[in-house]
Length: 124
Image 1: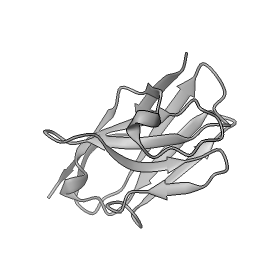
Image 2: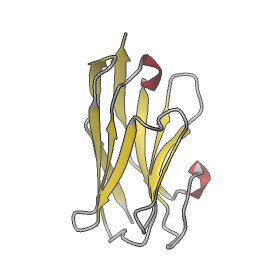
Image 3: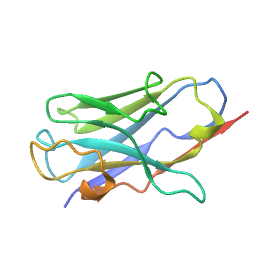
């Protein structure tokens, strides 16, 4: 059993930055890909970023150049730094983990555990 808890969301103005954090508990995830997804009202959940066991990173085109995903295996955490936020970034952001080891996962169906989400609202 894995528990994921996100934090760091909030209400910001366009152009601002936010750092989202996800704390995992229950087991070590150093062999696993961890990802961030988001879901805006009335839209499907979409991929934002992922980092695999080898620290390779992957980003959606919509956040490429504005987002940085990182992980700290000692603390069992993953973070998402978002810069130059836009109103289109408004969504609930979810942290997730794929329990299949040594697999790079970019599709939401590949992920086994999800956090409850943290709201990010960007005003224009």
